[in-house]
Image (cartoon, rainbow, N blue to C red):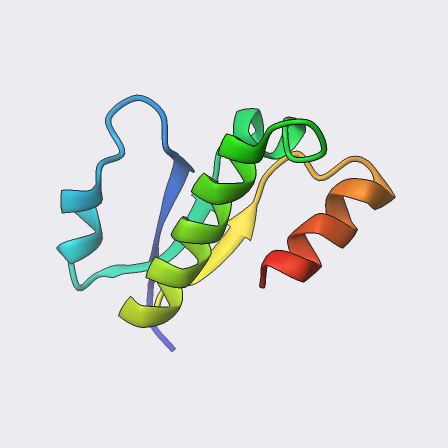
Length: 80
């Protein structure tokens, strides 16, 4: 209950790792720019996997923006 804060477009702009220390942050939304490249970019897959693992370790829900294909969904499922 109550209000929770989501950190939008994580990985771009002003969203930083330091902001994850804020105990009010309950959700992180990975920017769609990283999601669009999952099928072709090893670097995007590594970055997304790292954010997922970090979120889990900190007790933060992680969401992905811009999941538009079944291939993207399957890759995200495998990443965690």
